[in-house]
Image 1 (tube, helix red, strand yellow):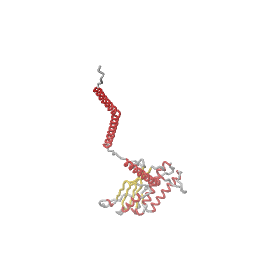
Image 2 (tube, helix red, strand yellow; image 1 turned 180 degrees about the vertical axis):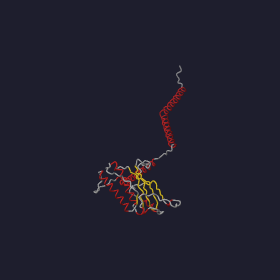
Image 3 (cartoon, helix red, strand yellow; image 1 turned 120 degrees about the horizontal axis):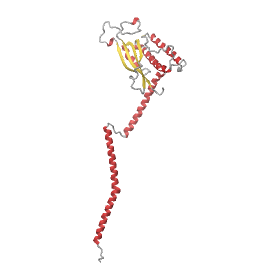
Image 4 (spheres, one colour; image 1 turned 180 degrees about the horizontal axis):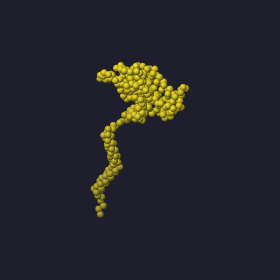
Length: 293
């Protein structure tokens, strides 16, 4: 038997062994290192693609992508808006306080008895009528729409809305008593109780008390009348102003009839100066739903 070693064969085996070990190392390296790395990258790529797809959808819908600085700026802006809204609510809460008052007794306390309130209501009516007469302003019968209780004693459910209407009437009378306005006739103050919904687009914030004021006055004082509305302690909101008189006619027709003005004294009937016009104001007072109610 030939006991000599086959050196070339051994070298060949070692070479194949080295190749095999190298292949094993490559496979193990791929499985342990490369494959998980590729998997993570693939997951990241898929996640990024999903994010890009969502962003594209947002953009297609008109949404804008905001960064952190924009968000901080918007939060600061929202804070300022809330502050301004709070100041706005305080302002109208103060304005609304004039509308929410109840008649006071001689000692300055709020009247809580229905009969006493009725007497104070009637007294208030007479005071306003006397003021109008003292200013020599003519007025139609029932020009002031006061509630006539007669022998009935009203309930507080009836008193609450009438009290608010009284404050509105009182404020309107005080306005037209201003001598600078040159009002010479009060046609009437009328409350439109059936039109409150159509006049109000902000029902969650306030109810409305719509009314119409009809007066005859010198046209030169019309802007002053509007100014009196704007600076009133009540929050008057003017919807429209109608003006009727000689000034807005194309020509003065001979023998044209004077507008009917019930309650006008005989000595003041007949042709009137062309500067005097009939003014009809449609307006309302917001009755705010504040936290005090």
